[in-house]
Length: 470
Ligand SMILES: [Zn+2]
Image (tube, rainbow, N blue to C red):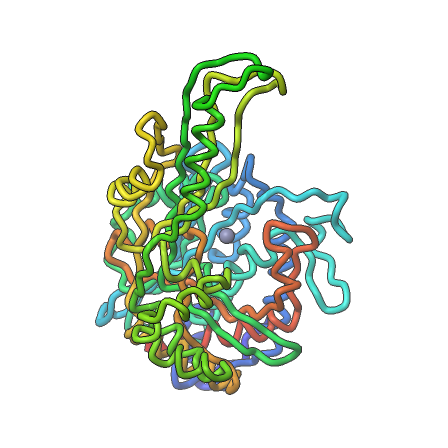
């Protein structure tokens, strides 16, 4: 990759006084960015990054950290690797601003989930390009976004404006298993980034149909898993002589009450905005109902019809999914205990103890014990009325005038939850536009990203960040 040449007098001056131009901020003297060259570079680096196997377990993120370090070193960007245990590492890099605004963090995780190579079209670590798509584990989750962050750092250092704020690149280990990397950074190195105003990471929910970007959902809130196990106990016996209040019978009765239970509807501001924003895309009567969603939710018939749709139900309430069941190992044995596990997801702002109290009433059987079986991380959210949100909207509109840009709450979890606790406004967003079919590659088979998306995403992501740091 060659940098567009500096104006001759400046170059001559640089040679005379013996400074390197490699890392000079081009600022107003910069000719237009040579996009095709940077986009070629982005595709090449995407492939290199995907070829490093960071399947977690075991992770081995030190290899990707070294890869990123070599690039930051090459472009003169200050950086440091923290190998917090053998083979497991985070890397942080920084471009200094003048301090008039607070920093922005570009956060990605370097680990990927494991891949069953026998079910893929190609080796999951080959980064082969077939029909315009780059195949590789991590192509969507989330080495693609990490690559955009990397390219933005390189572009800012060579082509960018004078920075009003620091831009911090942070790539971590272990997001897919226990968040060890981020937890370690926050526990040991928070001083490096905790004054940040903004953070961008995964979690955005975008939709492309054909060549048209239809929907850009900026993730401003996520729900939190609060996993529970119900344990029923009772007298054991022979299956030939039924026991009316046996452990399995009690458990099934309790589960039946849970299935009937409909947790109350709660409309969060980000969700209200989402419904209002998507209203114009609906046909009547939903168009009017969504436009005044808070009012519409007072109508039980509307609530019933809306929440029967999986895509909307989880946005409006705490949810409970019955997932695991355990009883006797033998058909003719009535067991002493029977258990089931519930995947409960709480809305931002919810208190798990309050939810439990409600559930105990629903179960209505004091002999059934309830245990929390995960580490609960309190759900949180970020405001959407910000300079960053407006910048994302403005830049996206210039490239995709048809796109609807709105807030989105995820049913899943991202590391934004950890960083919001430091007071940082965290969004899940990246200009990566996929179809529902392509999205099946996330944690699935044949994960891939189009070359076109890498090329165009490099430019769009850079434009958002460079606007924000002016
Ligand atoms: Zn991820």
